[in-house]
Image 1 (cartoon, rainbow, N blue to C red):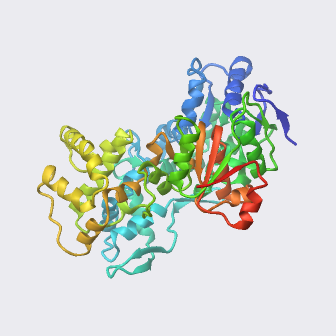
Image 2: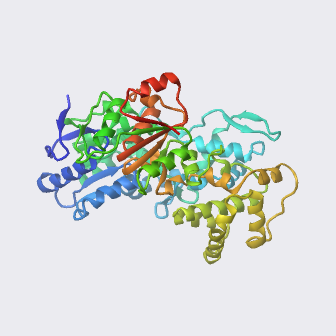
Image 3: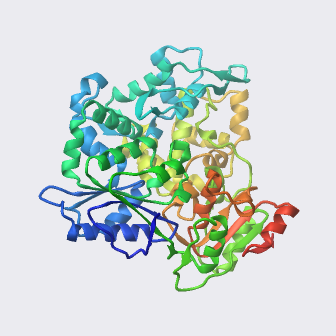
Length: 556
């Protein structure tokens, strides 16, 4: 039975704990207070011994660091991947470097997205000599592959069969990608001493399994190990934390199982519920400091088994259900808040992007990364230049330069290219991809191969620049329009949740067993004062249920 506490409650510094707290409860506030208490009263902080505080995201880690400005010499705040790279992989890789073909002095971590390109897919196919397979198919397989963790052990990359892709005749066919293709995907990265975040976890677990004495070094350095947003941890991380707790480390985990929304990478509600280490106390915080009482009333209906109490000092408006067009819903919300910002949150990336580009058209998610052009040189240039322009426009200059590097090695040249593209973006946004090609060829790359009549020419003329831009994953760069996953951990005065056709999270709440409903719950709980929910349409039966809820219902 968990003990109910407040967000300012201090607990014993020398016992492990599990804290469950709903959205807006002040989890990060409580955790930083506990860390300060450990610094002041803990019995294990001797010379060179520190506190490890792990957050699931860089944003979360930065938030904790900002609240501990004077304790950087005692507390290491980072993501789990950064922690494992700094404390396990980098210092101890030499023990198995020869087996893995990695140079410990040159190793660096690179996002896996850098390799999920048609160009790299071609490299994999060339490496294994698979002339029968298209790069589109291989790229699809690369997107779906990951290290397999089963029975508390990692194994090699495993293909998820089958992969559906179009053959040379344009028909969708099932392909069985050989294991050697996935092995090549790893080998080609490692040959350049580049590892992904997935690789960091794999290498760390393997090193600890092969050399358990490394645990002793980690334990000696970090007698306290706290991890925020623990519900988002995947099984190998859960096992690592449990191993630390079993080795006399004071382990503290903080989370909310109703905000477990990363099931697609292996995180689960069950592992948060079942987690236990020796000498562990359990606590709950039931207060909500973020949202107005009106919003909390709706949240408690969606999650009836964890009723939150309002601690907000001011009231807000009753949540509004807007039925109809999402752009009209956005305009309605803007009119309601008298010129304040309204943050829109959506589940699919493609919908979040559509709000950025102010369009209601249907698009193919991932269109820009498809093999739309059989000419390698031309497709790389078109794709990379367009991506670079959009990333730069939305403020992600690091990714913009990475894309430009694929086009030209001279940064001085690419700066000029990017300036031209940004100046021209407004004019090109609504025009065809063919017009974009003509502009690129005439202004930047006159040597680019011409387009000939046929299916490729038809594609360029039937798709617009905006079609390609919307299919990119740039929504997370925008301040106002985001995916719910990206907005997790943030809060906004005014939120418009775009739920499409799904209203079941309101009419038939089952948050414990329905992952999609948990995502929408997270989205709703970002709102401080005003919450708007957009649904395309509702049935008569659904309307009857909705009319009994603390909602204002408006048909657009």
